Length: 283
Image 1 (spheres, rainbow, N blue to C red):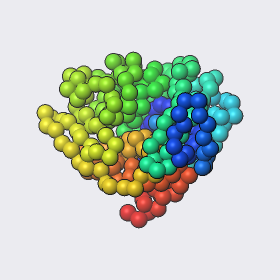
Image 2 (image 1 turned 60 degrees about the vertical axis):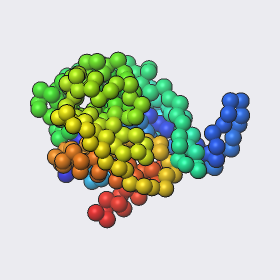
Image 3 (image 1 turned 90 degrees about the vertical axis):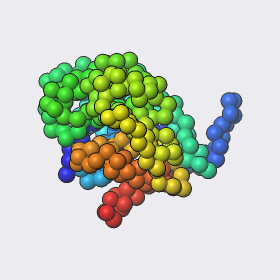
C-alpha cells in the first residue's frame, strides 16, 4: 500500500444526464440525475482509495449542508480528508453529460470564494506521510506550501495541470511531473524550462504523450465504449500518482492510468466506483 496526499479542490457535483445539450434559451428534460462529491483533488483521492491505497485529501469543505454532504461522501469512499478552510463554502458544479458519447459540460465557481490560511505547521504532518504529493493547482497557497514541504523532504510532486492558474509561476519549479490536459496553455519546452523533468499530456481518446530527457514518447489509450467523461482526467491523475508512488517505470505508470481511466469513462457517475473496485479485485 502506498500513501498519496492530494491537495486541492472538492466540489459537490449535480450531474444531469441528457440526450442533447440545450441551446441558449432552451429547456431539456434530463434522463437521470446524480449528486456526488467531485473536484479534481477529491476525485483523485477517491480513485487512490478505490485502488486499495491510502488517500489523504487536504481541501476546503466548509460547515454548511453541502460541505457536510461532501464530507460524508468522502468518508464513505475511504478517503481521509482534512478541511483546512472550515469557514469557507464548498463550490457547486453543475454538470451535463450527453448520453450518446459521454461528453460533458461543466459550470463551477471552483475555489473562487475560498479564503485559505494554510500554514506550514498545518500542512507538514500530512505531506510527510506521502509517497507522492498530487496537486490540482486550486487552493494555491495551500498547494505552494505543500509543494515546498515535499521538495524539502525529497518527495515527488505531481501536478494535475488542467488549465493555467497564477500560482503555477511559483509552483512549477517545485514540480517533478506535470500531467497536462490537451488544452493546457504551456508547451512541453516551456515547462521543461521552468524545471519540470517529466511532462505528460493526455488528449482524450488519442495517445498519451510524454517528454523527458530530451525524448518524446507516446502510448495509446484502450478503446472503450464511452458513457461518461466527467472526472475522467481526475481519475487518471489519481491512478498515475499510485503508479508513481510504487515507482513504476513511466510507460507502465501511464499504461496503468490509462486502464483505470477507461473503467471510469465506460461507466456512469452512479456505478464507476463499484466497477473500479471489481476491476481492481480482478487484478
